[in-house]
Length: 509
Ligand SMILES: Nc1ncnc2c1ncn2[C@@H]1O[C@H](COP(=O)(O)OP(=O)(O)OP(=O)(O)O)[C@@H](O)[C@H]1O
Ligand SMILES: [Mg+2]
Image (cartoon, rainbow, N blue to C red; front, side, top):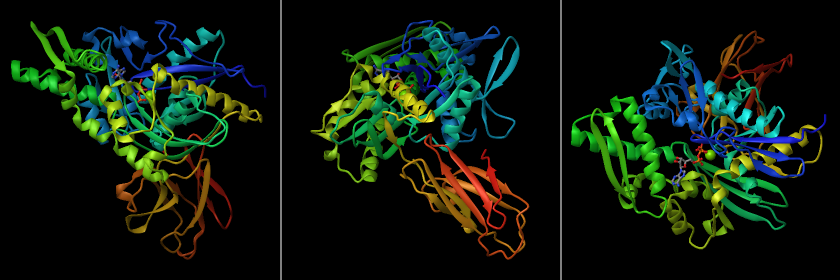
């Protein structure tokens, strides 16, 4: 099979997305949005008058249309309606969520042209991906098909599968997924003959990802540990400010802006602006919104010190994954040759100061193209995957690891681990299991993700029903369960009956 001329990488972000191409000669270009010329496309979709817009235009869509302007879907993709993260986010979103008919998918409610439409986070993410695809096709003058999409290192199996599904719905063939910190390392072209050990601190809009990596030989990356905080990103700084302003406004005017979606939408965008401006030279910013509600204007001056006090809790949390990643890698902070700081939040002065104070003498690399390194790394990785698929040697070798322990639920609410957290991937593990009772013809296998011995404290990845089992004494280990974890971090489970060796591939939903 001939290798295509272009390899495409997509950084599908919580706030901004970007798409990059890696040409055959190794050149990498971040593709500008075909409408705005910007290399970043806000991950926003707005529905209006029977049609939809994506990106900058959607982000700037009229505030009266706040209920139909959807963003931050990455925070809930692959999650269940009742999950704490979904509940926490939806409280401050101007659009509505409702539980889907399947009883667990959070669905976004769109009301347009007097009609109600329910769309899943996957479907909305697919619209963002479609828009990136069409920008890339216009830029390259050719259709694109095979892509690599990046995901936070701590994305669960369900979140990875949902991301892949979004790609498929956008008409893309997702040939691989790569963890964002790993992609950032490749994007920065960290290579050399000597072995280097470094920590990637990727602080984006939705999540904080931390990985300790080693570049062992030229163009080879080995991930030693990966940790993160899935509930810590730029959006949380915005939310802290938002809550602060809502409280101030209520104190002053006795009005709850939470109940007014257009006001809430305007205030949220203002919070992002305040935060970003306070990363610059000015040490205070005057937030002002005319007629935020009725004839009342919103006006608040916030200093950088106030901002740092309001968001102090978040700064305190940001070192936790750094410490656990170093511990899991068996390294000390002084063993790091450097720290690579990427993601939009790396521009917040206190983020950098906090890292500098912690790492002391370790150099911190961070530059203007912090927003683009992940998409660029994904495109370079896509080139490697395509070469591998075509049976050719590839330049980059990436050895990533599993972010969680994966296991099977057994009697007494316990979990038997099959693949431990931190195992290099791809990996395959098999284990024989018994049925619990004599002559048991069917069984239910529950698959869990997480570090507890108890199933109730882990995440349920999926349930598999086995039927028509050979009956016999219950204590014979006759079901062999195989977990195959691929390079994209996606789990496939197979069960085989030892007697007849018939394989059943189990789909997990
Ligand atoms: N100058 C700045 N100061 C502070 N924050 C900034 C600045 N510029 C951008 N940001 C914030 O960075 C975040 C976006 O960063 P980035 O583009 O890396 O995230 P993302 O890729 O969308 O999210 P994730 O990787 O978590 O899915 C937003 O919250 C944005 O407001
Ligand atoms: Mg990102």
